[in-house]
Length: 142
Image (cartoon, rainbow, N blue to C red; front, top):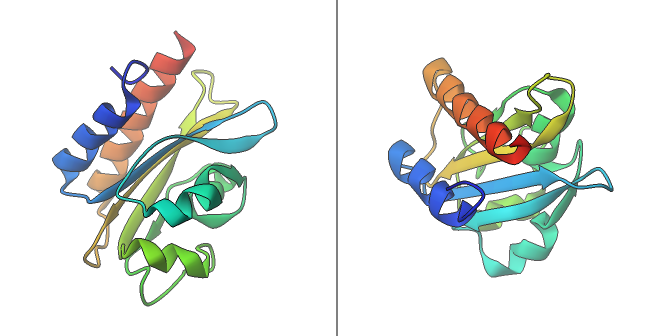
């Protein structure tokens, strides 16, 4: 399902977590995070998030740090990682996790979710999204 219809798969992830926005990026041959699927992101931001360098924005920070990146209230605090235009999403609570290769050596991409209301993601929520990232990696590597 992930590879056949990534947008439908992403919608399921968002519904389960009561999130309104989501992105799925895959690392391309140029080392950029290339947008695979998105839900709830305004059209005028799509060119900005279509190809993201590691270290830039929330997804890029998750890829570079190899750790989940969370912002409780993006509308009030960019957390040193989000760009000003990220506020155009109207998202407050945001979480992005890296997607690792099965050997853990490479970052294959990132999976991100967002909520309109401020939200401090729990360790369980972070773990759950990271488990979904493992499923993505398995689908991409099969």
